[in-house]
Image (tube, rainbow, N blue to C red):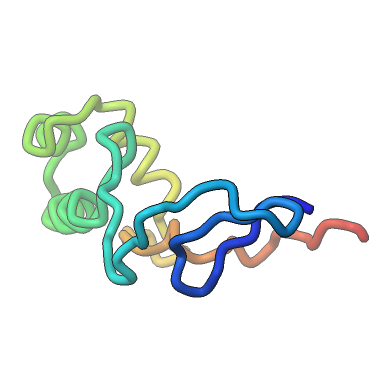
Length: 101
């Protein structure tokens, strides 16, 4: 039932029958992030500029993003010490309750 990939990643099976062959993916291939989302480099640049006291409007011009995007990024990633944490979005929020079973 369903699709099953062999460890080599080249044959796709459905119900025990080979249905097609796919090209194996390179294990270390890194998928590029779309322009809709801030890249890690952009997050770090925003944090460094804000730490240096640069205004939101100037940061937006330098990063070539909307001011609202910069404001949301700063609001989302400011710690209790008011320092911007560019990697903060990668960590789960501490006060999130687990989903019920």
